[in-house]
Image (cartoon, rainbow, N blue to C red; front, side, top):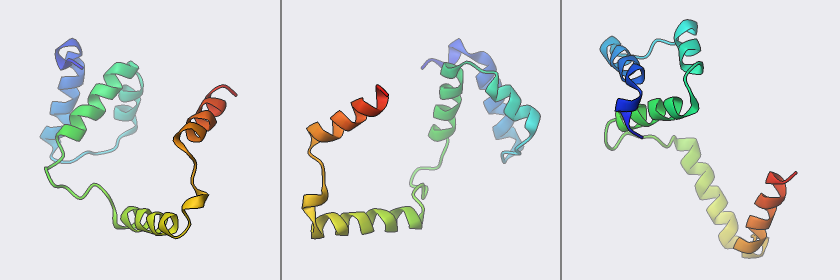
Amino acid sequence: MNSAAFPHVTVMLHVIMAAGRIQVMSDFLEQIRQLSIPEQLLLVEKIWEGLPKGAAIIQDWHRDEGQRRLSELERDPAGTLSPDDMWKRVDDLVNE
């Protein structure tokens, strides 16, 4: 997404960065909600890109749950779905 197409999103980002920390304010959140979906996605993308490299994005409990699920899968692989069955379930949910 091209940030030049949404200059007010760039201004918002500069305001956030200039503050040194994000202060959650209801009027600021309301401004974000009034952005179009592409503008909101651009804002999320810019925030994501601004995270320090190597930042611990995954919390310990996420890692622990992933490890638990992997161990469970290794113990009983019969409890899994084939890719075709998985996509059929996704399609069924989307088409409800």
